[in-house]
Length: 429
Image (tube, one colour):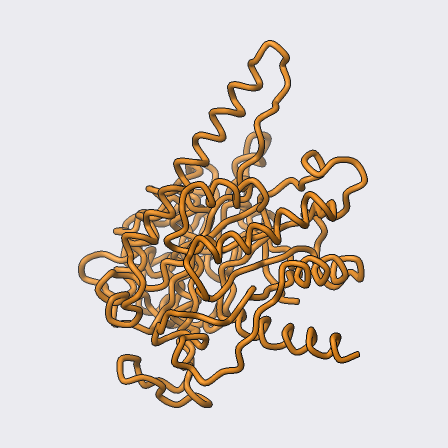
């Protein structure tokens, strides 16, 4: 009984210590039964002790814990920093393996998200995380989703091994500039963090080439192993340092381009002192996390990844911050009223993506439907367009719901319609 209580206390401490890391999502992987062999268990496709959202909007449950909250680093914004007065604990590899299996079998979770404080040399910490994943795969036959954190400073050999056993890897860039990182987390290095991202990208390309070659081998069998099939992600803390939104959006765009990241996650800075008081003179003295700003950055990120916007279109040199009252796509449209109205029966896919209220899915439906018939405004609504936004920016066969003649009036009507402050991006905006 005492042992169970001790483990329960560890779970409470190390799950609570992991809650500030937003960079977990379980989409993009096909499961590991081919690797673990017959008799394994676990699926990455079940819909559904942290809740995360996949890119297609499904809710999944992950066991989200730290291996240890003991940390040598003293990052000002981190609740687990070395100077923090918090209870410290660490799992053993066997405890985490058994815990994951039991939680999965009881249908509490659909996968594992595992990070850790830097309690020793980065290679030693990384080896512990890898050992957990490898044991789950090889001894327990665990085929469900595993997300491991790359510990900055860990060698390329360990990143390679981590990618063999995990579905996704991530290394948190944390702050938008190296200057802010040196100010708030002087023991971390932007060069080392970006180096780990580069190592992942190089390894991923190498593994993909090996798999391509094996497909065309005389045997015709694809014998090369998978490498982190769900890719890599990172996290940026929003509001702990002084950078504006344009800096953040430009950085995210650069990371997607250089390292082919699957996701950049944005985490509104949460004051880490007692209650919501000021905890460090280097940190902003705020009462609550800037959730609206986080929300707008997620929407801007959506424009980068799925709507073919460039960073300079979302925020130009005259705009440092995203508008807190309207989504960034509508903000762009109101600045470019000469683009509108868009005639939905003739517009290209790229043009449709620029219309507020028409998302990628509804744009594809429009293109498909008009191959056989023309679309009127009622039909546009049935195809999934959000007409409370789109009505000001489209025509159908020359007909309008409202002509786009007064940007200021449209802005007043549309301001805050999307429930700003939510932590999830809207998919059709």
